[in-house]
Length: 136
Ligand code: AMP
Ligand code: ZN
Image 1 (cartoon, helix red, strand yellow):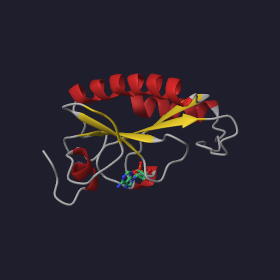
Image 2 (image 1 turned 180 degrees about the horizontal axis):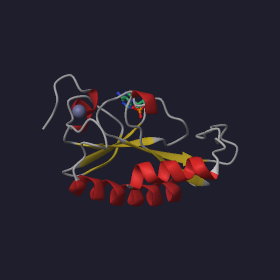
Image 3 (image 1 turned 90 degrees about the horizontal axis):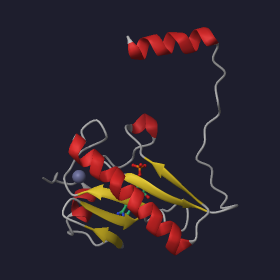
Image 4 (image 1 turned 180 degrees about the vertical axis):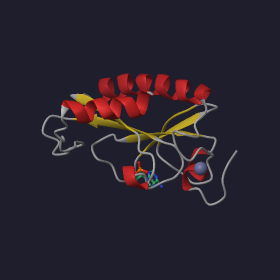
């Protein structure tokens, strides 16, 4: 299940070469060409899903198991000091390639990168309102 003109479909299915770290029947793990840190990689499903909302449960389970395995392997091999999993959905969230992917980002002491946000300061009432919106 590929989508015409999707670069990650082409990479995941071998039409475009990539630095592949791992491959099985469902996924390819490749090095990111614009890495945040040394070893930054991406898990790509071979099937095309635009984002997390489209990802079937069965693949969501597999992707997290694979992330866990890759994080352990990469931490051992690269000797990184920490690890971020990042997954963007929608332009507003920073998604630039609209084929689901999970970023595997090894972190090193003083690597100079920040994957953070500026914390807001909601009141208890505002938090309660949000809780109600989401849960009721
Ligand atoms: P996102 O902003 O979450 O959609 O992430 C897209 C990521 O894909 C960025 O980190 C890019 O550096 C990376 N990227 C784009 N094109 C390629 C490519 N041809 N091979 C490997 N990584 C890519
Ligand atoms: Zn695709």
